[in-house]
Image: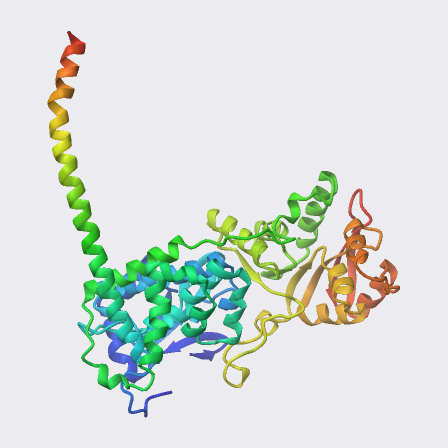
Length: 67
Length: 435
């Protein structure tokens, strides 16, 4: 339908605004994804510390019980 | 597309040859067919002529239930993600590129794929938002009936309109804010700028995948909240006693045995109990009702059963889907797509047509003769409690609404093959064949 059109890209109208919006949206989503994964790492870090502190105590408890 | 000896074929034009070759050679096509995401084709001449598997029925987005449109949207996003893995992209994301085998959506346009240029944003992003995101959000966050806007907007709901219609609280949702409100605002502010000036706009593949995932998550999270419509839980309200309901089911099963048509159109199907009986009889069933929640219930139930033989559609017989688009030939009307040789079921429907919609019996008989080779129709007399309910709100001007006159009018077009009184009721079920 558009083969003679000078718009080489025009199969559908992507809309310049939508192109710009898409790139900005993707950047914002990228930031969110990064923040989320950063937050997950922080949580994991503290969880690890907490678990390390817990483990010897738990082991002691177990030993006490078996005694 | 072209027809030869009654068979449909797809011809691949030279202008698309390179992209199509890439679709085949990259393994993308094989993968999509393998995962049942795209309709399979038989190769007639490699890279040139293919014969697609035929659909039982072509339906359009304005006839789909909320969950059907949602499934079609998720299918499109999934295909785009897989395409990127094969270095290809969808150049359009029209809802009309998706069709259904029962409740299984399938992508039908094999010419929608093109080679992905690294860094190029998704060209079909805007179209995807218009065809899927906007109607789904309007149905979910606004009114379920707003899907009908798709009928008047063949290229999807304009985003500025969606942005205006959506509740203000949706501005607080990051994904809705970006894909609809911000997208609409950017379109407005860039209206006079040509695309050529924005060829330096880049989007990495990873960023695009994140964008697609965000849309996927948003769509998955959407549901249809809703007040109950009168018909959505019709069968949970007891209209019949168990015996007469079971008797009616048995009669429908028996009468369907006299039909050799492959397709059954169940009009006024409600949540599709009798459509299921037709499905069990080996027919492909188009299960139609005007009530979007009844159709939604039917779709989700059939989806859970992985049913590929019953397609629930929203069809209002008093305002059925017309032909739309260029020259009214782009999207055919519901009845054009349906044809004339089907078996039609019209159970507990005629009193609505005659009394609620005031259609004369001779017009009702003429209508059914235009669309059905075989007709299973239930006559619901005036004394029936459901007819009385319809009459309670209006003056009874329907002196012609009685069994003998009904038969007289239908005999002008049909031969009555069988008829039976439904146990413990005054209703009658008829099996008719067009003369």
